[in-house]
Image (cartoon, rainbow, N blue to C red):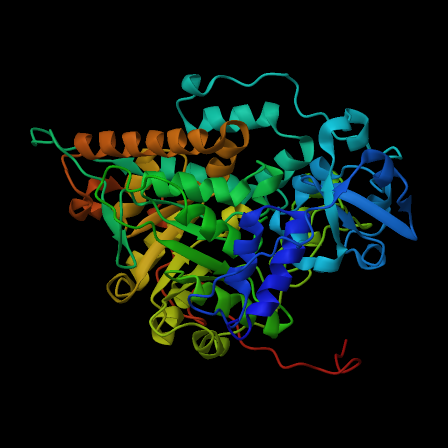
Length: 560
């Protein structure tokens, strides 16, 4: 017997009790060291998978003896229940019953398989006698909010714009999901301005140009893509669709566009990357050989957790790191706060769970308590040390020329002009206006870094205008989720194809055939030029208001 082979036989013996051969492969990938060429010899005397009847399952339905079923596997949760991040009450509701539906709404499938000790995998449920009642909780739960004002959504083929997808989401998403995805900070001024500012910038069409053949192919941080549109990082995708970010990844691969995976995704980075690598197709018909996948990071107060995430991201081959810098704390999103959150929701990458409090149920806030608000420019060196050599760093959330210059001087490879989709600080400037600020105050940043933009992109004309002002690519978040929620991967593909079709039409109308031909001269920005700051200076950034740094005084020092 090969040294170490006996431990693999032991693992296989236990895996046969609770799952198929694919589970064994999952464990083999995680096992260290892996023995090359090791042949597992299964003895005939090995214990076959244990079958648990519904009657036997029902006997284990108490706090001191708690079994439940997830995806056909019976688990003993007696010891785990008191430490469950979502509390033991939800587990007790499904004690002696099938919790698959409730579990899959908020957790990734692999979580219980990999986190619960093998000794707690009791066996497989004899599903011959399984009934619908077995999947019902033993005690009433809070009623789910009505999913819509209509029981049907429009057929996918009848949707022709971002606005169509947004309208479909409004009538089909559960109330909490729609509040989470669509909400923005306080009075929504920035959220609205992100879109309206694009409409204030005019196009200057050119005529009699041969535009019989056009291409939207471009590159993002050195990786070829079929379109400058990319999937911006979005949180808790499973609240929108059962496959969440995995479905987004598969759609992006088929389209040949880039995806940025969020720290707050509903699935682990491993699961998302596996879904992408095993998906068929790719390239979007544009000759793209490999879909670039980037990772977005919120730095954890416990830096060791962030370091572990970054190490794993590096091992999985991410093409770059997007560090979010515009959210040291979560913004106040009142529409999201007004609707109570499902407290079973957890984040697999951070371990945070949703807990409603007296301030409300805003998912961005109550699952964002791990955010480290002490992150500063000095931490970029630490961040660089956590990544494999050569992995680019992109700062996501730049909103002034001053910070764009500091990013350039810090040596990062790119920036995203972003205000978090208007979800962080209300009355912050519209992102397309920040692009104009960079062009006016520090145009050199476009030569030294790749500049991206997100927020307010609803039309192909918006994409075109951003590219004319120097953006390498444009991120879309809400639109991707609206399309995913009601229509799955096919919805995402149709949504992006609509944006690309509009972009191609705009290119032809403006007389260009490739994206290396875009330039500011194709735009009329006169209606917004007066809104653009003229100086990139900490102390001279206002055209007339003067100030001096105040000294901190002691209480009682002021005189009448």
